[in-house]
Length: 276
Image 1 (cartoon, helix red, strand yellow):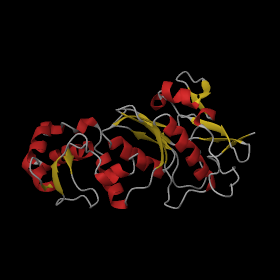
Image 2 (image 1 turned 90 degrees about the horizontal axis):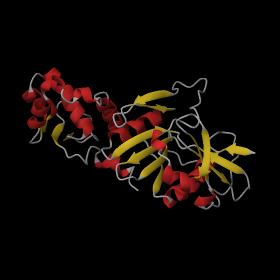
Image 3 (image 1 turned 180 degrees about the vertical axis):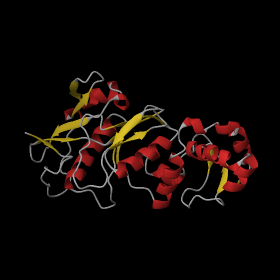
Image 4 (image 1 turned 135 degrees about the vertical axis):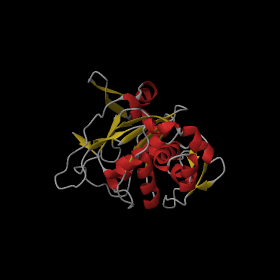
């Protein structure tokens, strides 16, 4: 019997995560582009399979009574849509999408399968997010909605996935929710993530030049040209990291904006949660 440890049907295990199987003992199940369901040894699949290109191996559940259901995130990184199953996951996709190191994103592309060394049962877990970095590293992640410690099921899966990912040069994380102010600012900037805003009105260079030296947001927009035309360009530049601001404070007309660097589109508070 296979028990899916990402679902509520898995009984709790006393004493925490328990013993962790060797990475070679895990199997990876995924759906190939032609729809074929494939199962391979995890250590082989992690090297050979481009998980960022795959569709979900399992759909996001629709839970009656919840105010938030599955949806789609248009990714500036991939130029396509990435499905999500919760508001917390959507927020994490925004943060990952904004990271200039990112080259690929997908949702639930792989199911990890292993035999639990404590109970002897075959267990599975489907991480919510897969992200590929430009240097080839990868992140498997879950997006808990709250800040409370992981329950026994999630803790056990985290221990297994953490070891399995480390063995192949990946990282597994339970991504913490960002500060409310950071979340609100990133959500606002995400509305301008599409590349059409980059050169809107032909003001790209004027906007960047206006912030060659740090100055308040609205003052710089006015210096670049007509404010209502310059602001979308400015917000896109803040999203992409060509301009930078302190996103731990509410974004407004007096926010100090300055020139950014391509490797700093995420500020330090955002980067910490994805550090290895």
